[in-house]
Length: 257
Image 1 (tube, one colour):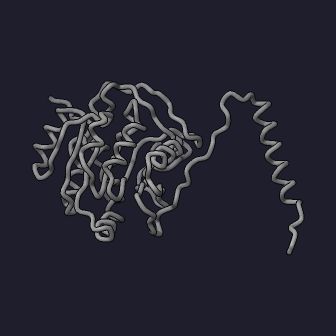
Image 2 (cartoon, one colour):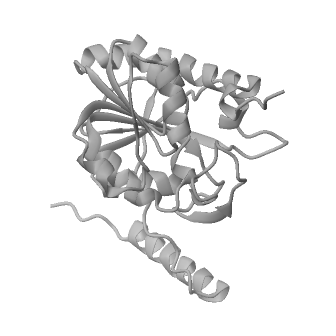
Image 3 (cartoon, one colour):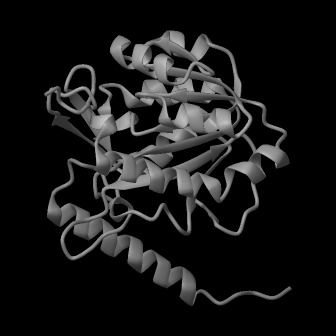
């Protein structure tokens, strides 16, 4: 009996359903508001979201790094134009621009995620929706992790996993005007912390211009991190000095003219 591919397993299908239900809440409204017609799905796998975007009325291009994924996706979804391309290849940035860019479950599989984010910025005419795993750290950092040698992992099976703060900072530095989180993420345990585990994943919207929506929360670019070579003593001393300076400023009387 042949082994079921990871993308076709029941738990993966359920996960995709939670993400598509999330998209149902926003995408039609965005498509109409911004007159969006074209979309690209970067890291498409077997084309689940590529087909979803086509059903929403987009003209869709889809990209994946594995030839076998592209061939299977094209067989399943002939209405979509699929193309094999490594998302870390700088050629990605030269494919043109699309009204809507979708990148789900990809960046944390890459050795050079910042390079790919810069390429995604070049592809984006209006909106980029980015989803993936994030390490539980409030600082803008990445961890280099080994991955298993399966077809739903990275091409080289080692990758930099970013924190959410790192993703936000990279999106801003790549040139996006605004980055947003969502008040209500997809209905799945991966997007919420529990007594068993910390939050696994995040979903972010990056825009070329400011947006207004009741479920969007503007994410500020993370500031300067602590100097990593400071000792614990010098770091504590710096924080005390910063706190005292704030107190002194608060105590200075305001002169009225």
